[in-house]
Image 1 (cartoon, rainbow, N blue to C red):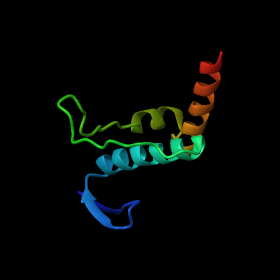
Image 2: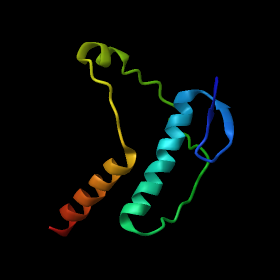
Image 3: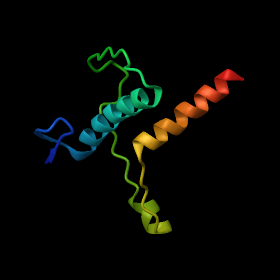
Image 4: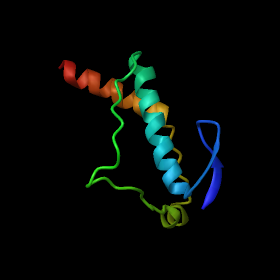
Length: 91
């Protein structure tokens, strides 16, 4: 396990990929709220029977083959999706 700073300001010990998954989800909520200009109603539930607790995707081979390192800005991707969704559903 690795201890890394949390977006909540405290250091928490957990596997890095789990931390990234949780923080990316929280960032997605925040980005959606910022894009729409409203606060979402959140009903945070415990893990459900079919939920995936963590993923262990490794993009190392892809990076080795292409020389490209994936870089995702969650806020801009969410904003683009929301804009597309709104346009698509107005048609």
